Amino acid sequence: MEKRQQKQLIIGLVFVLLIAGAVYGLVDRFFIIEATCFDKVQNGKEEGLDCGTLACGIVCEEPVKPLQVSAGKLFRIGPGDYDFVAEIVNPNASYGASEVTYSIALAGLGTRQGTAYILPGQTKYIVLTSLRTDSEVSSAGLKVNSVQWEKLAMPSGEINLMNRRGDFLNSISGGSFEGVVFNDSNYDFDSVDVSIVLFDSSHTIVGVNRPELRTLLAKTERSYKVTWPSQITNVARTSVQVSTNLFENSNFIKSYGTQERFQEFY
Image (cartoon, rainbow, N blue to C red; front, side, top):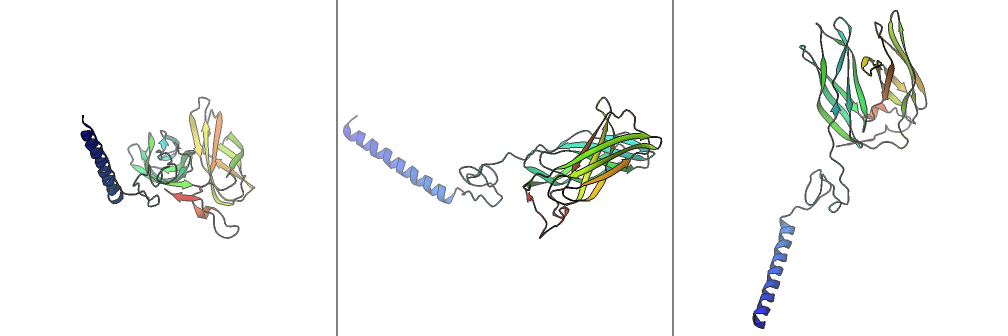
């Protein structure tokens, strides 16, 4: 190849590269949407919703995973009177649900609607008592209909509600459970939820109950008692879950100033 042809080829390549660079610049400026990182829309080079290391300087969190629901169980307490329990698991460490709407399908008798909350990473029993029906029911199951996810920024100092003592007793009049809940935190709560689950020796649930405690002040304890109208046999172990709704601002009793707020909508 002659030197003149080589020179022309080099000039042509440089010209093509210049044109390509100019075209890319125009496309990048006028046609490619830039990342905004604040408008709740994934755009530009965002790797997720308003996040991405290069675009926003924020590492994207893992997508919110759905709640896991166990098969529900029904307990006949008396004619047309039932208790129900199902377990739900929140696999998300940063997100909880301020409202979970669910329906309970009663075999042959339609559905019952309800709502609950669940904290980040929480495993929770949904316990319902005194479900009244006009006829006998053989089984029931829980289905989650909708979930309002929220990111919960936990307050400094862990919220620690614990069941300090609990005793199950059978008597002629029926079964009973007495316990004591302690609020080992610096916050006063208007309402605290307690779920009591009884297991037999084969780890099968044989009974449930749920008292609701009102006004549990910081560093104080409250006693409670629940009863069943008949004896529950073969109770080998009890599980008591204590929680409170951290998404509900009014649940924090005001000591000074305004009520606490720890949630961020998803």
